[in-house]
Amino acid sequence: MTALLKLALSPAGKALGALLLAGGLLGGFYAWAYSSGRAAGRVEQLQDSVAAYEKRMGIDDDTNSLGRVDLCVELGGVRVDCEQLRRLDPAAEAE
Image (cartoon, rainbow, N blue to C red; front, top):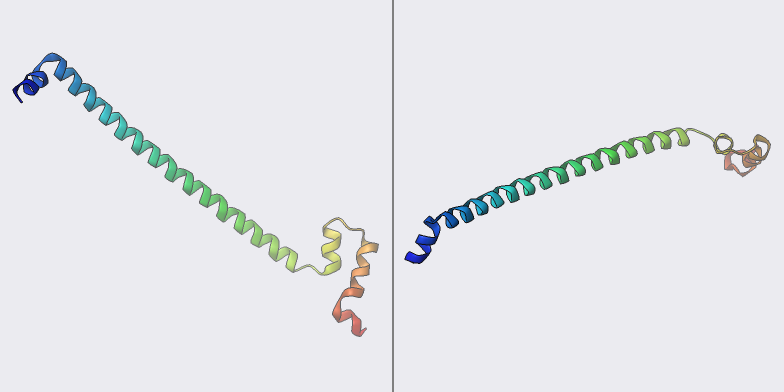
């Protein structure tokens, strides 16, 4: 026990203690920085997910408001070809 105390009080023991303390502080700082960066990454990912969801909801609203022919034309179809979709409309069968 006294040998350990002599080692701790010697210049080499003090240097070793300082190195251990510095290592502990650096390790703690690294862990804190890693955790903060990880949390920031999750927040950014959630913000991107919400923005994508809102954009999709806007697209869904625009798409749902279009009829079959208008949707066909909007997706790049030729109006003449898209007019054939009117015959597929159940409401048009009564006409």
